[in-house]
Length: 493
Ligand code: AMP
Ligand code: ZN
Image 1 (cartoon, protein in one colour):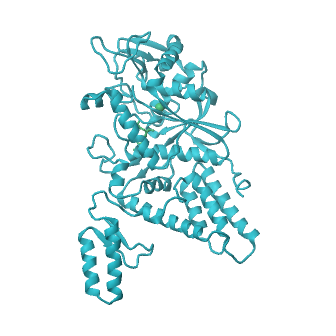
Image 2 (cartoon, helix red, strand yellow):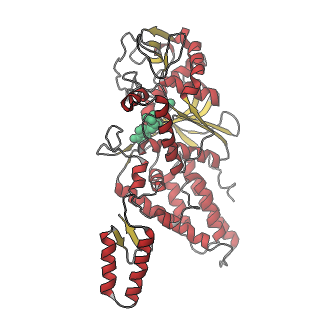
């Protein structure tokens, strides 16, 4: 059914050219994607997870379009400084010192926490997770290859001279519209934007993570990691490189410069020279009161949402409701609205599934098939248009609201659409989406039996008794919801 419908060419916004471009794979029939992954020195906040929901939807869309996807996400366990422009300490080392734990233990703990969020958000496993510390030998080889022509040594390490490649900073438009005038953080740099390829361990010090290199004992620069891991696994040039919009300013221009040096190519007018043909960036999730900052104590982690009783896929839906290139503001009201919307979809899907198999529907079956095929085509047009998930969701909802159509058509098409959206429509039940605060003291069994008892009292016209049960439930934080349009009988919290 869908083959004829998924014909819209996939157009993606390339941050490098600042244009929508039709996706043309480097290798016929394949899509190779690299996403900058987390620095595992702390829990990810929900803004970070927006970046991976976006990369996941991109990957799912490429699969929907029939490409054989190879997706790589890296884990940064060394090298990322507290300031992207080479200033400050290694984030991992700082956290390890604060906690009096080894960097390896810190990395393992937060990597597992990140993976738990990945699973909870129904983000598909990439083909490979590359861990930075597994690639240090290859990083040294890469650096050796570019050192002579493109780098210079200072007491603190080996630095990349950005004036040795053409078009440095084109991605960031650093010298034009959005130039952000970076400060020269390291004494002796030739250009303010030059960046560390290798950071030497200062004399008399010992780092927890350090390796021998031709430039002394030390650790790799953060930008080097991604050039090396993406090139090693996917081969240059590969198709798409993703990250959050902050990476458009420093990290990715630096990766591009290294890739140009490594591939011995130059100007960026030829899209092969940047390492990846298309560079894509998700905009930020913002929260006005500063709860997104990891230094703000109880910051917004996915687990906090779960502890307050929200199903994590409500947050996924919240992300999909906005275009990935738009800023998205987080609010609890917004999350609640997304949860309600998800409930309606799950109930809508469940209703159609309940009608299977083959309910007798009046009308012409060809006509019915045509209706769903058109809806799938509209869905495809939406996601093929630079991943317009907001529009794609509307199409899905319109389909679930159809009347007089064969249930198989709707169920098949909705399940297919959900391979892109990843909302788990086929496995979620309405009851999974009930608000379940961790702090609640009353059990669901207790609530359900009280509700049943209250129904019996009302049937016996014992309204005073029924009200008493309702008040007891209210005292335990349970709201009884008579006449709720979604058919909910109670809610916690
Ligand atoms: P980090 O662990 O700091 O390297 O960040 C992981 C990913 O999250 C990167 O792709 C960042 O660009 C992205 N990111 C950071 N903050 C936000 C935010 N508030 N909203 C969306 N993406 C973000
Ligand atoms: Zn990266």
